[in-house]
Image 1 (cartoon, rainbow over the protein chains, first blue to last red):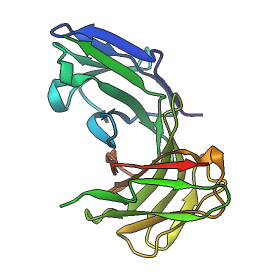
Image 2: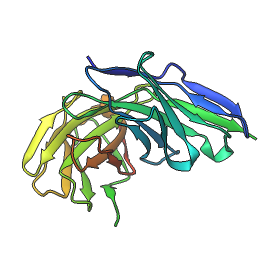
Image 3: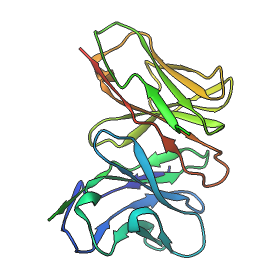
Image 4: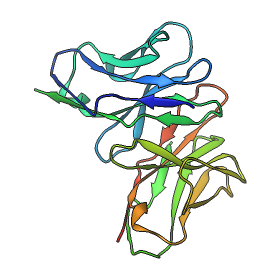
Amino acid sequence: AQSVAQPEDQVNVAEGNPLTVKCTYSVSGNPYLFWYVQYPNRGLQFLLKYITGDNLVKGSYGFEAEFNKSQTSFHLKKPSALVSDSALYFCAVRDVTGKLIFGQGTTLQVKP
Amino acid sequence: NAGVTQTPKFRVLKTGQSMTLLCAQDMNHEYMYWYRQDPGMGLRLIHYSVGEGTTAKGEVPDGYNVSRLKKQNFLLGLESAAPSQTSVYFCASSYSVTGAYEQYFGPGTRLTVT
C-alpha cells in the first residue's frame, strides 16, 4: 500500500540557517511526489513536485526538494530560512489511482 | 479567477443536524475532492469526483454524501452530524490524475458539532 511518512512533528530553525523537512514514501512503481504548505487558517498551497528527471526539484518561495530513490525520500530544503516560512508542511504521493496520499504534516518554526 | 472557493467558512451544528458544504472552482478542472483535516492526521480523503455526475468514496466516506451535478461544483453533505465530524474540511480540484497535476485547495470550512 502507498504511504507517506513525515518523521518530525516539528522542526525548529533560526532565521538565515538552512532548513530540511523530511519525507519518506512507499509506493508501487515510479513515484509522483508533492510538497504543500499551509499557513494558519488557510488552505494548502502547492510548492513543488517531482515527476521524473533531475533529482533536485526547485519550487516556489526558494524551496527545493531532493528525490532519493534508494532511500525512498523526498526531503524539502531551503538554503536560508525566513520567519515567514513558519507554517505547516505536507508531503504527498500520488497513488496508482491518481489520488494524493498525505503525510501527517510537519510544523516548521523559524525563529528570528 | 477565484480558484477554489468554499462556503461557509465556519459552522456550528448540533448533533443530528444536517448541512451541506459547497465547493466551487472556476478552472474547468475535471477532478474534485473533499478532505478532512484533523490534528496529527494530515488530510484524509472523504469523497472525490472524476467528472460531472460521477462520485466515488475515499478513505473516510462514512457519514458523508456528495454530489457533482455541475462540473464546477462539488457538494458535501452531512445528513446527521456527529461530534466525530468536528474538523476542518477542504475542497480541492485538479485538471487530471493521469499526469502529475497538482491539486488546488480551497480555504477550508471549520465545522464544530456539539
